[in-house]
Length: 161
Image (cartoon, rainbow, N blue to C red; front, side):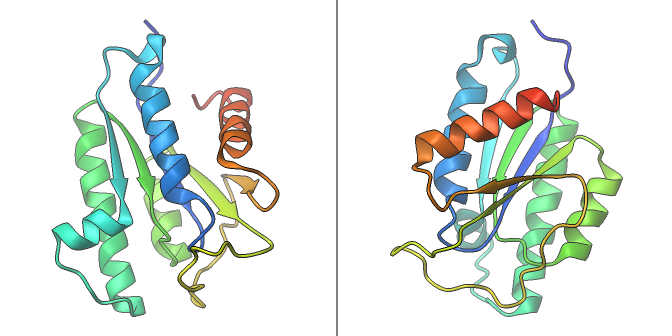
C-alpha cells in the first residue's frame, strides 16, 4: 500500500468542459487503484450538492455559497482520511486559492475548451482562471478517454497521484 497522503482533486472550468465525466472517471480510477484500495474515495459534483442544499441561486452569491459548501464537505472527508474528487465550476479565484493555501493537498485541475460542446448550458462570465499551482487540461480535441489519460499522466508526473 502507498504511503501517500490523501488528496482533494478539484476539477474546475466552464460548463461543457468535461468536469463531471472526468470527475466520475477519476473517482472510479482512485476507487479501483490497487495502491489506494484501503482509502475511501468520494465524488462531490456541483449539481448534486446544489440539489442537496436546495441552492438554485446561480448568481455570484449562490455560486460562492455552493463553492464554500463543497469546500467544507471536501475538508471534512479529507480530514477523515478520504480522497475527494470535486467537479464544480467554482468561478471565484479567491475562494479556490484560499482553499489551496489552507490545504496543500488540494490539486486544482482546470478543464477548458476552445469550442463549447452541444451539452453546454452557458458560460459563467464571472469565472476566473487559476493563476498558480494548477494542472491545465484543454479538452477541445480530446474525447474523455484521451483527456483522462492526460490527467493521469500529469498527476503522475507531478507526484500528485
